[in-house]
Amino acid sequence: MTVAVKHTIEVQAPIERAFAVFTEAFGRWWPATHHIGKADLVDAIIEPRVGGRWYEKTADGRECEWGHVIAWDAPRRVVLAWQLDADWQYDPDLVTEVEVSFEPGGPDRTFVTLEHRHLERMGERGEEVRRSIDSPEGWRGILATYAAFAGAT
Image (cartoon, rainbow, N blue to C red; front, side, top):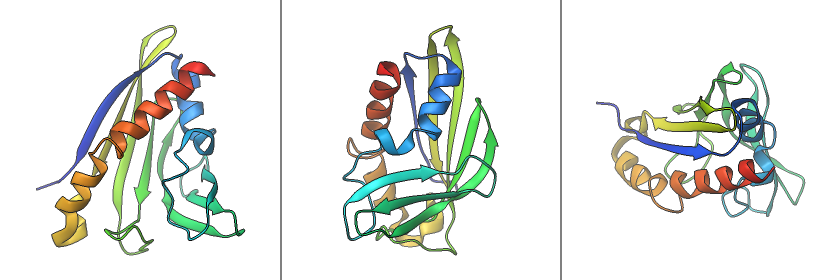
């Protein structure tokens, strides 16, 4: 059985801008509290291509991997390999997937759906991670932050 978290949010922006803000401006809206490095988060980056890295830069100059880009279909969808384990550490052998799809709802409105799936791959701690990323501090809150930023830019 696939264990997943799925949320849809309405963004007050055309689809092209909604996609660009999610991907190109990722580090501008991503919560600075959500990082895996020991030092403060300076930037979070999604490289815009299949195989591109998904990672953070920290105040001490380090780069910490989060995963990589599995699919890039601008401006309709991006699929990211989330390779963080239940202790929020990079694990190159673990792949859960974060798919973000963008559906136009009008000229200045886009419905953005995020599905984080295959959490069962985390083993016995998969349910713990599901609860964490489904909390207000998880994907729901992160998407609300994104939607506010995208609607304001």
